[in-house]
Image (tube, rainbow over all chains, first blue to last red; front, side, top):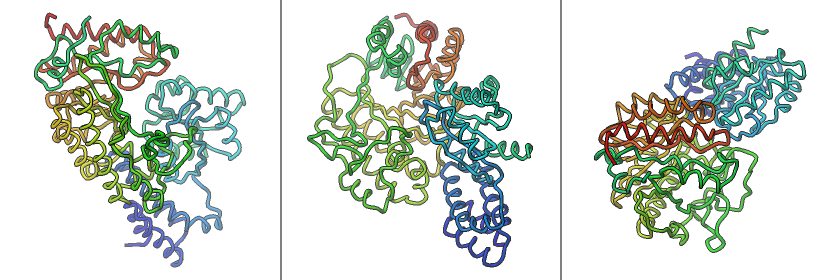
Length: 213
Length: 346
């Protein structure tokens, strides 16, 4: 089996130590760092993401795969920086004002990282201005918002208003998700995408960013 | 309207026949936040409606603080500050299973002999639930943080078993004491195992880490002449057959939008009592009175059994956006349509 394929296989099983060793070995053997990233690490995460979407694997499986990916990335990153490899896009993510629920948001971050995004986590109970300030600061492509409560869900609309007030609405792809959130609600508040789960979110986010570029 | 008796509720739970209407326990989840924070107003309003099941809380240890006279009666073994600005699941009390905090945790594990564990209560003719929260998975992630907890099944399986065994020993003794010291008809515990789409982990993980310990709790409940009720949010359909196999009596809430209620009722409605949770995420805050009534009729048509096995309640705790007229419609339609479903004269 080619070493890059092996990296993907071990990543899918969450075997962090093996992934680290294989990435190190692949670099020593002169493999292209971009190929190790795209065809080894990210491709392995994509397969896990697909399986998660189909309920063939579960959150723990995604987590240990993401952990393995991060271990591999830590080895790979200095080389990627050297050759000037750019992330797929940048995303600013948080749970909206008044809401402390972050399990779904964290899962979305892992999936986005898994398809090659640079992630900026704003945490929970995030003010509308903070979403916009951070997006401006890091040059984000995507603003992602999460809410679990019917009472905090309307605060997603406040972020859209904040963007409009600053004349920035069209600059960003705005995505939302969370248990009470619906497609209808997304249309009402004027965001670009609602996705029902983390894997779909990553898939749509990548496509949306690529379409814009 | 009179409330149902203990025997009527037991009969419904055990599938020995429906009562004159389904037992109602909406009040378990209605807090003062649905009444602009006015507790007295809430109590006055609720007094106008039936409440068929009483409950009380067992005084489980807190996460961070212990009573003065029992300094080990808390889950952290060491002094820690609670981080109130983050979700409970992102606080890590035991950062490393192989570190000192873990050792101290097991060494100072709270004792179920704590005198204040079982509160004293007045006697009643109603069915009585003894409640506690955060059974196994929820306790694991409160100690370890969500991400650690979920990977522990793969990375530290023996530690998860050690924790769950210690928790089981605590719970078994707690259940015995509750029955010795007051009247209990059923035990109710929470353990959210589902997400909106699926379960948090695979059925294999459930069977290895959860099923054996849950079985011990269910067996103990039955040995004590009581029922076991489980609250578990999200889509838990793939775990239901296992729960039924090991003797779970009552399941809550069959969360709206996560599972097909008709399929659940058809496959499992004769084997387990459904503590059916009314939709709190959409219909109560955003729906009309007529939509509330239609949803009640849908639930009763779906879950009703002449043998019983249905109790009506909320899907979860109240939020300040619940409309009072919707709550009135909820009670009214449940009573009206519930009486019609049973066809019995009171």
